[in-house]
Length: 375
Image 1: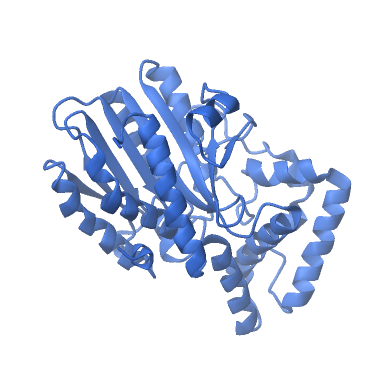
Image 2: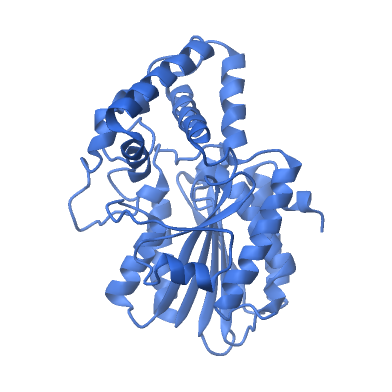
């Protein structure tokens, strides 16, 4: 199958292709089913789609592959799931092992080529504790530099706006330091509704569904392996596996078990609302006997040096400003949206070939090591 056929041009086409996987999944798991969950207004036709194929005899292990938590990133994620169905799925033993494939956790963002939900919420900072206090002021470093992260009026001149952002960022770096600025960006924030990296003040519908799915799988299976597909960060055209801090294995153990080129363990336990971390929190608190490995798999675009991080931040900020305030010229709008797509879903054929190549390796390494995928 040609690599390009794994990648789709819009949400509707991607969803239709995903739904068509059910027949192939049924050839291995005859009991497989498609579940469709409407998110937002029913008339908008935004859905999370789930193909669930439970083990046919004993529910021992399950592979969970999810995509689209950050909207636009779902296109590459759906491509990876397509590759898995076409190339890897038949090497799984259906009697004791199931699969669960999730398309477009954030369907509105995917449909509209945005990273956030219709409420401007970064879903991967939205898995907050409903019983505890809302983490409104959790990110003090973000608050200090809020002028950098918040919309600043209509874009009248793209060059001037880029220069303004560059000056503010340079000033913030001088004042706060590189590590603190990265911290302000990665933690998310819960105070400024129109700002970037907003985690929300209540659970989004999508987060509620994912939480319920996590609990359902933890209740039914002895061993869960979760591969959550994302794009943008890390070395260009390479895959990085990011493991939450609550994974019991240390970084050296993880690197030894899974021979992938780029692996990092996210060490900042102060980060609030991460979905993979939430999975571990629920497992440790309520299902300690269930074995879990949950990681985020990120395909890099711009690169991982400081120049690339600057470009990434400016792209995120400008796209958010464009959404809320608009631009005086269509050329400015097109420039920003093109840059945003280059960051999260490049059209470049080489990048797309590398995504599938790297995903193929990761699936075989991770699911092979976890005894879900046979050679």
